[in-house]
Image 1 (cartoon, rainbow, N blue to C red):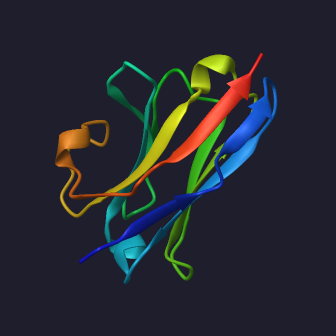
Image 2 (image 1 turned 90 degrees about the vertical axis):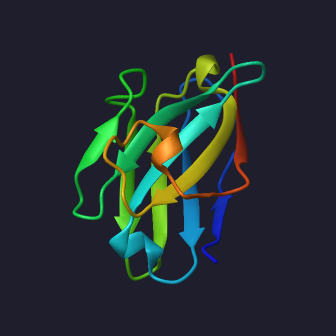
Image 3 (image 1 turned 30 degrees about the vertical axis):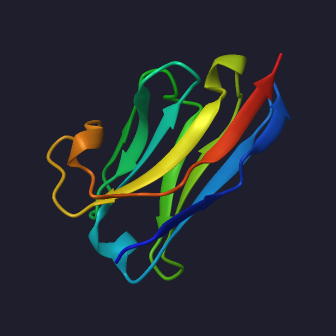
Length: 123
């Protein structure tokens, strides 16, 4: 059973930065497609960023240029560096993993999910 655990969330002022981490069990990070999604209260879960097993990345337009996804295979960890945070970035951020993901932004194609970490950006 694959387990994903997010950390690094918190409260930050607008314009600040946070780095989220997603630790995966086994060797999932090096062989799977890894994604970050977020869900604000009363809204659907939206795509944020993803990284394929071969290193290719994809970002939502709303975070492009501000967020960076990266992967440390030795540590079995995926990171999401978030800079220039805005109040509209406030949400619970979820890490996801999938072996076969044709469309990185499609949450239904991911097999495993973490419990989420809260990110709150104050204005």
